[in-house]
Length: 304
Length: 277
Image 1 (cartoon, rainbow over the protein chains, first blue to last red):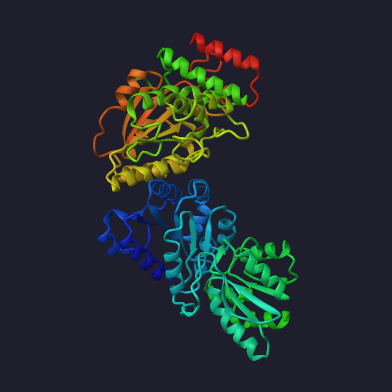
Image 2 (cartoon, helix red, strand yellow; image 1 turned 90 degrees about the vertical axis):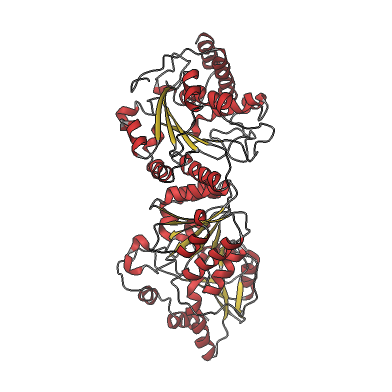
């Protein structure tokens, strides 16, 4: 998915001289071909995220559209004040392209695990928060945000995700994407866990259940009308996300449901409210937290 | 060149006293303000706006303008005074300082105040933005210059040095930073909190050209800030200043760093002090 993100940014750079890529000591050779075409607009800066975000704000104040790319936790945690003050307060078109969304960097430990990024970024007025599910959707998100005048955070998943979104109607920025219509219970997810939810829904259907599935590529801004309508239509909304229980998509949906007239119950299927103590793979942590297809299918049966 | 820690020996002329009187109008309007930090900045900003920078108050977004970022945003009254004096907005606005519906807050805000390039307030942010602006100016072949004014206490922020490293690396010769080295932080003397010395050596080591001046000496500031760049390096100007300059009872007195409930008698005392300065 990162490859798709970089390719989409490179494509923008080929057509728009205001687009600048700002990397922070990324892997050797990253975007070398693009740098050869646009030498002044592909920057590989030092390991200084606070500076990089402020630097990007300075570029944006001068009319450029910087794409700042590094590991998600360093953008959202280390440079949080710069993101808030330099970028969001000025409402500048800076794009934060965050590698390692959720537990992608499980083997590298908690310093690299972006399990609180939605919470941190959602708290910021003006910030768009996107979590595409596959490379095609990543390409679309980057393209759809190209002319957005304000800031955006884009969570990049592990990579290698199969295409599950190309047949869906293409929505505007912030649009929720219904995958399956159903009754009684609906699963709402974002990012790469859509790939676990699809087989979970299939097995629930095979059991004779009729769950709905919607994918939320934009955690912010959230289409509150859509969620309100769901809270009136369904009895249970199961929110599946690779994030802490608080502050992410589940919290956003619970907020909408609590302040509306719908009666749906919100069930959270998230990572635990804890820093990981083990390493292993992303999937190991999904299994431990009940975020795999089979665990999600069981949750659907249990809460139907 | 002044020695390290030297106080300014410069006399304040009529214009410097006038600008300080506008600052006192502003303190009076809001019954508050960072008094010491404002007064140490007056000559630095005066010379930049009177003699150095290109700008058009009727067109604050003129693409070819020089940019100034007041990274030590708490010194904003000195900036407001200069912007009002130059006609970016009417001087009467100064008396609305910190009122609920004023455009002039306790730190400068982008989009609120004509001529303010960026919102600042939290320290250690302005230089990164300035480096971005200077890089953008080079990329777009704009001939303008970027000035970033930093406080001495602000240099404690690690982010300043990240940006310094970047500016030196990119050889941004269209960037000048000015350190308002008034030697006093909120709590007390800079040298007792975190000594910055040797300060010039730090900037030199980060790839800057570095000059030290008396920050209240208009001639010295003018001569330094209008010097052509060396063409390969950003420049650091260490301006030795006195916190509270022009108000003897506030000079070098940390109690006057910020005042939040100025009484009419305080304002009278400030006015009298500046008249006699």
